[in-house]
Length: 123
Image 1 (cartoon, rainbow, N blue to C red):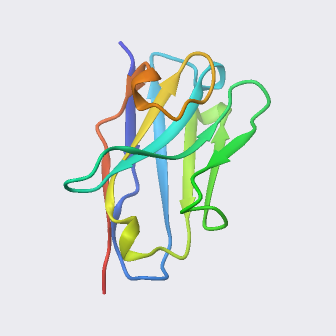
Image 2 (image 1 turned 180 degrees about the vertical axis):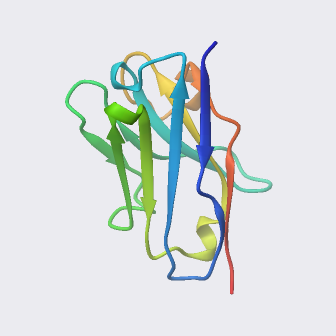
């Protein structure tokens, strides 16, 4: 049974940092492209970042470039999303997802999803 479990969310003040983790069981994350998505209330799910399975290349949404960093630790079967300089607009539920081929913008292309972790940026 494949499971992705996100953790690391919470309440943080504007300008603060959080590191999200996505731990997998049932699959090896190093053979999947892993994407981070987020969904705010009343909004569609949007892609935040993705790391490819082949060469570890990374992609970022324009809104998070320079502030967020995605990385993977294959030994721990974990993908991280380091989020710095957080803004109230970053408030959302964050999800990780696995794709067996490559990074896609369309969330419907992803095979497996975690349950999400809440990130709230507020003073």
